Image (cartoon, rainbow, N blue to C red):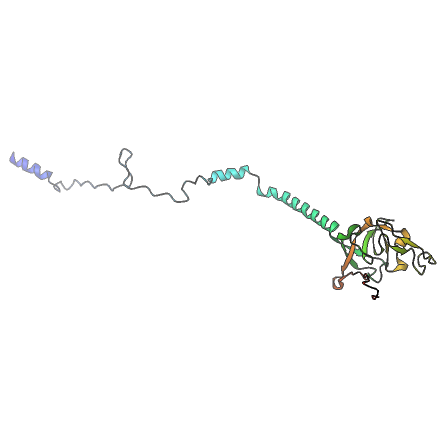
Length: 243
């Protein structure tokens, strides 16, 4: 009996197991807890990156952005309307500038020789002088010819209340000059060409209403190498000693 007890104690000693019995190898410690365990995990899970983080309440997520893009009109849809609106504004501005401020027109014909050539000159017309506004005797004006639908260029020889000769002194228009004078009526002007023998002007169709004056010629702009201002050759005498 004492021998059995001694042998049993030897078996219970650590490392005293038979050679064919392998000691149990402890399992490695896992980083996650068992689903049946109530204890928290040994280490917290890695924090999510910025790209995986939840979007802020002020910024829509990708799905919301896609829905917004799908529900809104394409960006190019507004382009044609903006182009049309800009074109209309440009056309309106150009019309106002051309009709009420300044314009250009070609000059042709021998009636204003030697001031303008027969062909090849473009005239700069100030529309600020429409309807004869601030026009003086000696100015060159563009006007609507009363006997047709054309636009002419002539020099103002008389304004309302002035007395002018109805024909040329040498009788170049109606044969022998009669020397008759006429007083320019109110609201009219008397215009003639610088080349009297080749000009059709007030000597043929009478005084021209100021309402037909389209503007005053202020310069020639073509050819550009010969740009020049058109000045009034007449000036008001300051005293009896002036020529």
